[in-house]
Amino acid sequence: MRTKFYPALLVLFILLFAAPSLGASYAIIMNGDAHVGEQAVLSVEASQIPSGGSVEWSVSPTTGLTPYRISLRAGGRECAFTPLDTHSLKVVASFIDRDGNMISSTERMITPKEFQINIAVVAGKPLTLWNASERSDYELSPDTLMEGTPIRIRASLNPPFKGEHTLKWTGDAATALMSPDKDDIFIRRGSVGESEISVSAFNASGTRLGGGEGKIIITLPASTYQESAMEREAWQSWQKAQELWESGSYAEAVDTATKAAGLSPRDSDISDGLRAMTANYNRYTKALKLRNDAKNFDAARRFDDALKNLRIAQVIWPADDGEEGIRAAEQKVEELRKLQQEANWLRDTASAYDNENMFEEALEYYAKSIAVMSSDAVSDRMERIRNRLTLISDADRYAGEGNNLEREGKLQEALNHYSASIMSNPDAGLRQHIEELQSVISRRERQANALYREGQDLQRRNQNQEALKRYTESMNVWPNDNAKQRIQQLSRSTRLAPDTVIRGPEDFGIGTRIDAQKMIQEADELYAQGDIDQAATLYKKAQAIAPSDEMRRWVARIDAVLKERDAVNTANRQIAEANALFKAGKTKEALDLYRESLKTHKNAEIEAFIRRQGTSK
Image: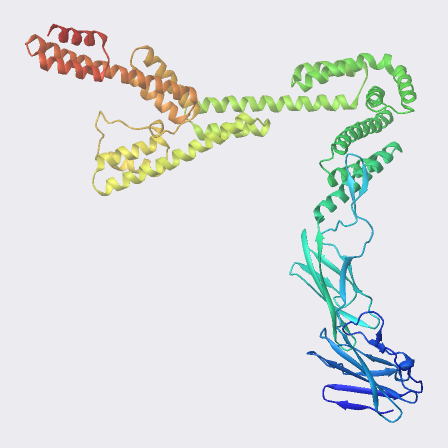
């Protein structure tokens, strides 16, 4: 064997013993296409090689890379090499005779191709969605893919690569790739849309075999699939709940149905069914409680109550042995009925009076009931009622005394009596009145202290008469020792003027409801006598102490009357002056004043008079 090397040219040969046929048409044979990175095998027919001669092979690129490894096979009749790119290669087979002379040659141009890589989704288990109206699953089309879940894709080389290869996957920014160096990988996309995927293949030597691109279209939002799964689970849970209900597991059925409604709150069949099931369960539990209570009543020999509960329970939720239990209870009741009938009627009557707080009547009928049939419970109740009546009597006495003290202006003493009344018999209305009275006392104390401080300031400036007035007002608003001592000291040298007006609590808007009622009564009398001004003053003070919508409207009405009266009086004075001017012949001045009076208060006669004067001109 002899090998020759030329620039950019590798030549291989081997001695062969077959003789070529003279005049034969030589050709280089290659099965299929050559591909980058995959070994290409070319051959010549054995008959083409001269007897005792050999064949030399050469592979040379036109512009690309020279294959770095070329091997001979089949005694030199075949040449094998791996193209490194897609540039054309010229392959020459030279036939050498026994003496080393080239007697002929043949050549072939080959252009390697890249492998096409196809990207496809590996079909898995079909996705299913729940058809809420049909209550069944339905399969989506095989190409439906869901966001947020692993999707298996596969790359396949076309034609298939004969050797070992590796893949390099890439994807867009929105797509996550898992195991990106394998033929089968998983991708995940967090939103609906197109995942753009590309892949490149390389042989064991690192030569790129080719590449491919593809778009994986994600059309199914995960939320839709999850909602479908929840609706499916909800319906299955609801069916389970119905089975549990039919088997008598009511509590478990309601829990299961509640979970079903939580999974699919918009499913009206489930929500309506849950409402009906819950209502029935409430009836069942109510009946169960009534039957349990009936057992307790029976143990306590309260047969009437037991019978009543059993009958109500049987109406609410019939039981198989319900009627039998009722008949047994009726028999027990009948045995005691004659003895208990009158006593029960008397006791029930007494209880009705008791519930209406008609305690005297209740005591009377409880006593009659005990006379018929003794009862420790009734005796205890009678004792409690007697104690209650005593407390109520005490409370009424304390409240009455407190009311009298309040009317006398003795607010602190009244407050103490009201508090004693509350201790004996709690009363919401009286408790509120106590809070109001405490507020009045607190405000009076603060106002008295403020007046006392004013008096001190006036006394320091030697305005003793004004200071004495403030101290007196302080005592009038709320008695206190400091003001009392100052009055005693100043009274030795200072006297108040006879017409001095001493302000009281009402002048500062401080008073009780009783104070307000007294003012309203006095104001009503003044109003009836025609003294509207003084009445209005008292009404306003009463409103300041005890505001009410009725009094506010009444004060507003009186203010309107007074305003109307003042306007009429003012207009009448203007008209009188205008009359005098008119009589004096000062017609223009009179008319001006007449018009001014109309602005103060409308007067149809004056308006007519002014119009007549204009007509006479």
